[in-house]
Image 1 (cartoon, one colour):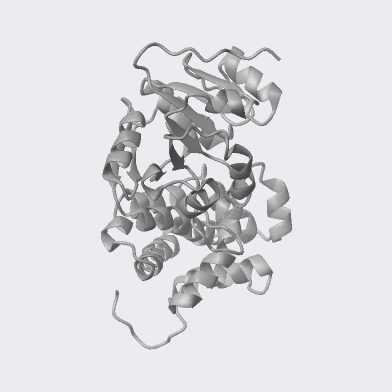
Image 2: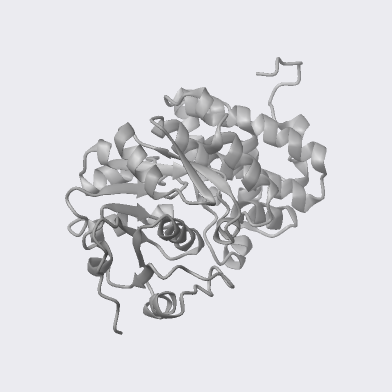
Length: 345
């Protein structure tokens, strides 16, 4: 397979995106439309060929035309060559093994950005922590981006915003400039913990919303779970050092609303199938893309227990996944173990 040679105009930012699923391809489009020269790593040669030659990704973004300054390759060396920023969009549970492959290929001064929303099973580490550990790079060169970002809507250039977070504000700003164009605006903060956990935790609440939707409950039920779910998200994230205001922003509330309310959400879809009576294994078989919320339930509950944080909604999702709770039993009056009136905090 003949792949394009990477030749950028002087002064044009070179970036790499690892992962050619719906979100990786969409974010590559965001970056290309922001003026960067974008190389996208696709595991399958035939998909890389389609992206490079036809400017389409019919598997994940049917009907979307991709920019001319975006090309793909199955060769990691070619994709990472000269990259100033490397964006990583692979399933969270395969991140570590992918990083081990690219460890010697990432340019020495490149910024590495997580586009993923999950925690690692076993270690309970956030994705930026796995990146720091496996690539052995300074924390100031690592960032994460999160927000109300449903891939297909963005690929259709419907306006939205996101947050880029890094412990180094200059790093976050550099990434945000690259990830800004007429339909996509990036803001910055230095609360990596809050930004990252917001993206993880909202997936779990979205699964709960999908479950009650699949059961047939209405808007009151869903609004109650979303609201109380935000409390669970905030309590958990703050216990691990996040700023509460981060969870009230784009990476928390904004992402929560988008993911819970849209049929485009993989986590919402997975939950809806569970609510309709499908088993966990059946749901996994039906989903052609990863629903990160399903794999994050167990490690999040383990982390919550370490800090003594109660997460009744997420706990009930875990019971539905295990087949020990009827999906119909997830409802607002069950989102607490207490029966006496409580202050709304």
